[in-house]
Length: 274
Image (tube, rainbow, N blue to C red):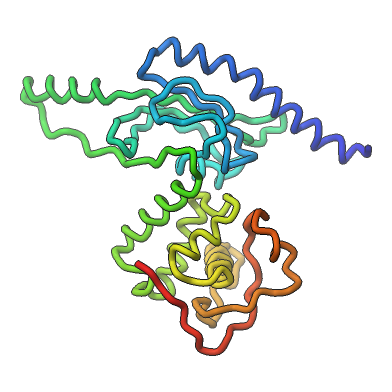
């Protein structure tokens, strides 16, 4: 085995060792804060099943479950990701959660996972509201955003797509080309396309072909790149003929990557769904 082959293997062993060392630590943290606390250990090398250890039941996570949209956003930032401490969010069931996400790095400084502490402060917030009302305090704070926590990565991707479409306040069919590219750029920045088969999932939800989705993603990235040429003249929302030379054309489990545009079929409109 060459030196170049040994270095990646040694790095993976180092990361595995860090995760093993932290696994018993999360039980101690959760026990310290009691039943309102949950600690989750994530391995970002596998976003679809990033949960490698969990103590507590605040979000209902289980080992082998997927990362949340918060984790996907941090994953998209790569080694530039920073710790996010004491932010407040809300679960789908309405529980108010104060959370901290701390990045895990190897000896080279590369991010490969995170340690997340989630504390259910729902009852504390109710007590605060009651005391504020008795004291005649001002208006209550704004509602915390809802975060999708779940063991199924598809549900997280769907939630992010629904949130982006809701902000557009239009169906996909009603969006002009610039707003369609903006939607794909926003999903990309949130780490959606780091997940396997996410392009196919988004394409199916929007009622467009997989090749069109790849084209939108490619053009959105080019438009956002300082040295990029920006979107091409052709509207990507037409049916494309997949290249026979594409290496992943017959591998449904292959990692997502943008592909070069392929010739459009003449004037065949895409279907669209709300």
